[in-house]
Length: 421
Image (cartoon, rainbow, N blue to C red):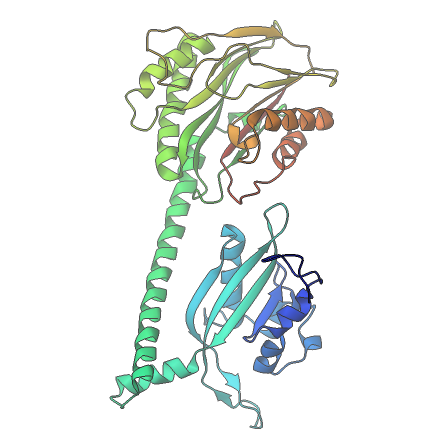
């Protein structure tokens, strides 16, 4: 082995398959749908199987699920993998029992064994889980030490400390399981809340597509919103907004602001006046300041779009011939709370040809920590031009998935509306 300098990577290529097989503890490599792709030597010895008996098979072919036992290997792995896929983070199970056949004994004779496990994701270039490593450790000795201590047997200092550590780990496991169940219940409540607050009107029109994507850490809810109002025959109001933050608090603020802006639009019919009214209301809502929004009104009779922005990224208009994209950046005011209440907000009007496409979105679609927002906007325009021939639904998908992933693993909420005019 040679290196070109202190602390640099060795010049030879690392055989990662050999490294995996040399891991001292049992380890299993899985696909996201729980097909076994590889197993190291320690795993093969532990379960007394050959690699040919495992690779290419579903986990459930070898370790069946047991509806009566949540800690059965199949059940445990499925639950653990589902959490890994949802969070893209490792999942740890501190202690569970799974007995193994005793070598040399008659079939059906098992030895009591206890294990801890870690299920970890391997992420691809797009930040999604492409492989899963499940690693287990035999902690039977720890359990037996704890039992001996509970029975009043004399143990060495090391054995006593080991038993105490085991007891603490079991307490933490029970607490984590309680927290996980509470988290799941909160997620269900959050999703029900979000469905109640976002309108279904847009989904009833074939020329409109909407997308809503919370950040992966945001309990499936966020402070981004979209709204779609029919103010009269051929007169449509489309809005997108972004409250600072994630989770239930931001979603609650979002619900109040979305409803207030909808009411203001019904009352005024003018984007600038509606946003001015919303700004006055936002001052009374804790956490609402610095919210951004864009409100548009589409007049299908005169083929015009009137819009106003409060610190929000500009909408995009793809011309009917799909050759050019106009950035609607003429009416640009600060976010809510950044202007004195009596200051008028601006709005602008432009014409469009039938067949054009209007796109509204929140900043999570174009912002990345490793590049400026103009680069992100240029990328979005390129994607819109390339896929503009698609219908609203597939075009929305293309806009949502076409941007490069966040390199630092972080992400942001996204709300997106596509309207074929």
